Length: 337
Image (cartoon, helix red, strand yellow):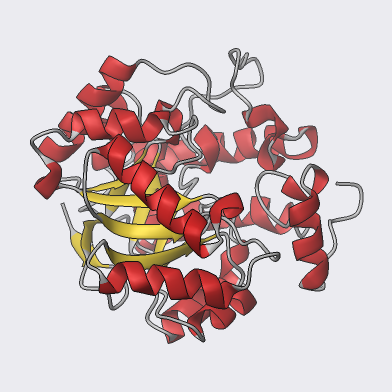
């Protein structure tokens, strides 16, 4: 397993990490806690050190599962956690931090992220409290998730942002326009999420796939009728490229994202032992240039067909806070979205 430093924080993480949202029992459908714990243990055995969670994942359930799994093994793990946008007042951050640590059975967090911006709370206040937590030794690195380059620059006026967590994969490449160049210029690490496009880059989904109760992926942007079939066709086109090297499509897609200049680590939502074992096979190899270019081109064709979406979840359609945020940034939802 390869290990890399998150920005200038001194925090080293494995090139892939386990995203625990699917272990929460929310958004992705039901989860088996015992299998989730076995998956975390197997990840550690494979050299995966990074585990990402959030207070918002199943109202803290993902944190509880991770805490149980890391009992006696905390020092082997790098825990990245997130404070929700409704808890960004300084007192709210401190209370959320304490609650998350209690669920995780730890007294510190390696990385603490702002999950989403909140335009109603001054970022100076947010960064000030995060820097106080860092100064007290309670967190080792500060992260922001789903921030634009403009928002990154503003946050950076009031503290050191060590890492950005954005969606990034072969199909979804909006960060290449501004966040990725900004992070490279300012030595900010990038921890990608939805690195397998919410399962579209596993090769396991088809037009006949029936999503189980509680699985909310069909309401996200890549799963909309205008895009879903095209994504499946592109995935089918990519599979033979991966197979030439004895790799699955998922492994080839992971290899692509962890190899992108500026990317530090890729989060992957494994929730079974088999999935984390497959994901670990996405690193420590390389695809020859011609086939790598073909893989990239197949994914880029999907990206270039997308409207200028504001996020993967269509939050501007459901959240007044997000809509006002995008309006303040001078951005409007894509026509017809």
